[in-house]
Amino acid sequence: GGVISPLLANLYLNELDWELEEHGIRFVRYADDFLLFAKTEEEIKRAAEITQTKLQELGLEVAIEKTKTVNFNDDDFDFLGFTFQHWRERKKDGKRYFIAKPKDSTWKDFKQKIKAKTKKTLTLNKKEWLERVNPVIRGKVNYFLNLFKAMEENRRYGQESRCFVNACRNNLLDVDGYIRKRLRVAMIHKHPSQRKGHAMKTKWNNEFFARIGLIPAHWLYLHEQYGYSLDDYLDYMKTRQAAKQQRKVQKAKERGEEYYTPERVRKMQYAQRLATY
Image 1 (cartoon, one colour):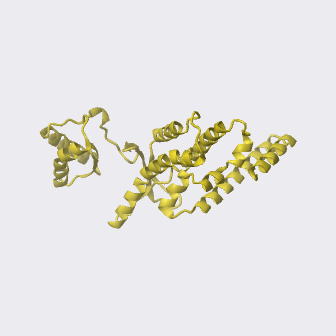
Image 2: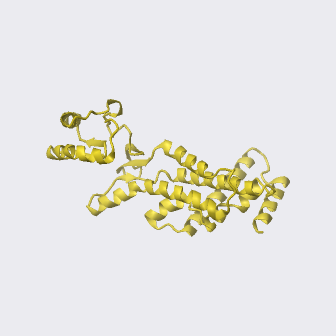
Image 3: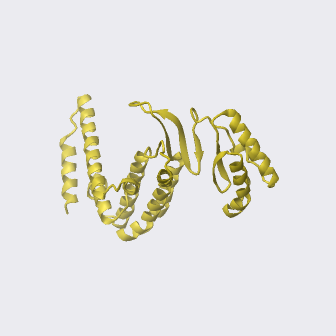
């Protein structure tokens, strides 16, 4: 509908909830955003007509441009900042599942919020930087975890979910890398004489930031679901980095080039010496 506060929406639309329940229509509603569910096209049309009639009685209108019918066997849809990707079958056993993950625009917004908190014009100590970025990370990840929390709530009622919510892990790793990069730039700005480039990436690496208290989004997301420890995360990142390095070596070999050139070895040794100080 039009612009309506969550409180007013709930007061008005409680009547819609009762109407839908009375007709046996399954639905999910948050304020004035809602989904209707049905197994056939005829049933969904009936549900839409009942909804339209009730809203007219309440003096409200459906926002036509925001309304669409989705066949979840083929089509995806967005709801409350998440994209729900249609049914698919697992290759190993043919069981059906669907994927739910934060909308693509969420990641751009995440980075923008971090960028706004890490302006180079500020000269802060490490603790102050963490106090600026950690709340943003925690807030975003906690919102992403709403999907997992909803699944857990359903399990308490005996409803096993066929939703896969961990398709965003690479996005979380990407955001973590962006945050570390922003902090390196901000921290170097306070010390203009500080060495830059690969040397500082080696010294102020993933483990350095985790140990001083930066919350890795990837770690927090899995920690809240599975109790994933910080050491588990750091081991995973080291393994991932080693595999990435090995791929670079292999690609150079395929091109007939030597990856560990004298110049690269010199830079790596220097960076390692700097990291140990």
